[in-house]
Image (cartoon, rainbow, N blue to C red; front, side, top):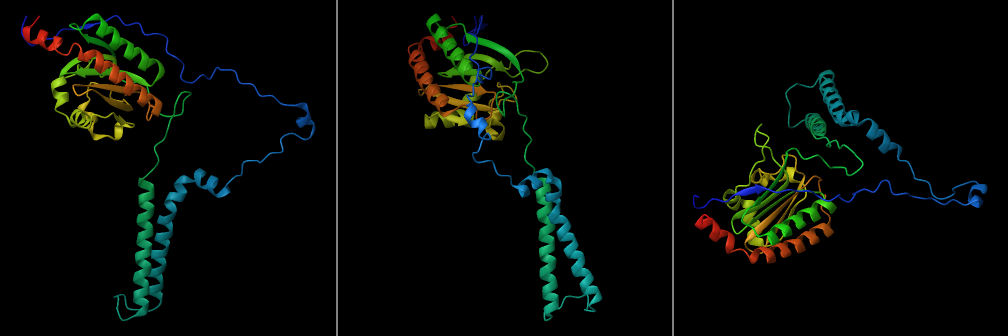
Length: 301
């Protein structure tokens, strides 16, 4: 066997039945007394309606275009007034009329530019479903790869972490790199071209990126609540292309756990604290075998 080679094997993976995140089927009961109905029903405060806000919401395009119409009409009015008033077309700084016209033209042009900006900036449409406003289905393939040199106790620990995270959080991908070696990749992964195979983690390239180096320097958890807005997402090509959120959890000072979610801002404060404790537990377990796997790699066992 050639030195420096690690074998990764697919592991049988039977995840437990995940807990429902939105118990919509949970029965809800409302108790109403007959006395309240006999007195004319509900008499509490009623929600107020803002007619102006409702009209603006229903006529969004017209409101955004309104500054353009106002500015254009004002510009035409200034030019028409200067034409019929008999003033020379050349602006004269000593004339109060010319100064007023220049000010009016400036305001009209500003109004037109404001309308163009309003038309170019539009809120992103959101698809609402029964779970979350930002939940998506990860685009990729299922992947269950683990370093074959790991002892059974470490494998059980890693699988426990995965099943726990995927059951009660929005976690859909988990990657563990420790002591410069890629140990685990499980869940959804990016697809390599049209081959149907998962993109394997390149640990050496990952360690050279700013994402990994930043987490290792700070030794603190980093939460990318909206991965699409983060330029460093190119350093995580093994995650599905539409991964919404990522938590980068350091494992001591030797490793990192990369947790990908399917929901923007889907990891709550409690989830982040819990993931930090899981990271400490994984670090304590992997630290016992940190000298075993590298020696196996060097010897080519």
